[in-house]
Image (cartoon, rainbow, N blue to C red; front, side):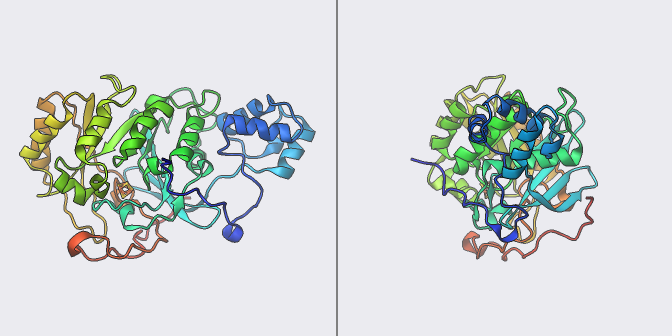
Length: 393
Ligand code: SF4
């Protein structure tokens, strides 16, 4: 069974700046084929790859190791194109969020979270999402479409442009880690995500280690094993509940892939070891999932899995039906999980002032899904949720 919901439609010209094919997002084999079709030897693709993904060059004319005639033919037939920036916001804590416009006018969000010893880029895989996790702002959007590999890698390229990180530094990177935790469910866009992540991991280009890339899923069980075998990055599970009853509400895909199946898939995830632990994301919701009994149940569920737990204080968004747990409840929960031998850091909220924090991403231009919240728990979210913020671009 194919995991893709639908193939991403070809970019439409309506809002686009160019109709030339984009070389970004092609696999190495596809790039070689494109060079052969231009009458060149396949090794030209290696040179081009270096210019695009190691040096970040977008102008064929500046690719001086390529002969002039070849550069001209490249420019006649192709482009090296990034998504366009609609809004570029910077939080008081240094977190940066880009609202990016695709060729067809749809928008997505990408977030950079700088820390002392690393910088993490949170990348989107879909425009909107089919899943309706009730604590997640993106879950209030309809799925518009899957992103292409060009649009996924393009987020990394654009962030590196913005941060000024070309050519690819071997150490001390501002973008040292990628998490597929932005808008969308990556395992519902398997082929394009796989292609994009292989481009990011390629040693002759962006060269990010597979240990520095985390693919986060809400629990698409058939895709988990496949991701381990065919992509091989770190894995994160958006867990948030320890009973099927509650998880059916918080992460409704649980009705299709209940907790037992999900935890079994984690137990057999290819490559999971104590050095490569699976991360379980657990958003702390006041009075909903934050009791000591639930912490103890979580510990029981994790038995036999090389795991760590990220406790995420809930980041509110307009119309959200939940509140964040108290500091005391979070500390108590963390103590129980820690005492059982599982690291359970509490994630410091980042970028809340620009709605860039976990679970807050949502395109400013997207209309909310009609009353998706079960049982009328909350008023419908507002349209145009991005607060007025100065752009930094
Ligand atoms: S948490 Fe992820 S899978 Fe769930 S609605 Fe939000 S974006 Fe979709």
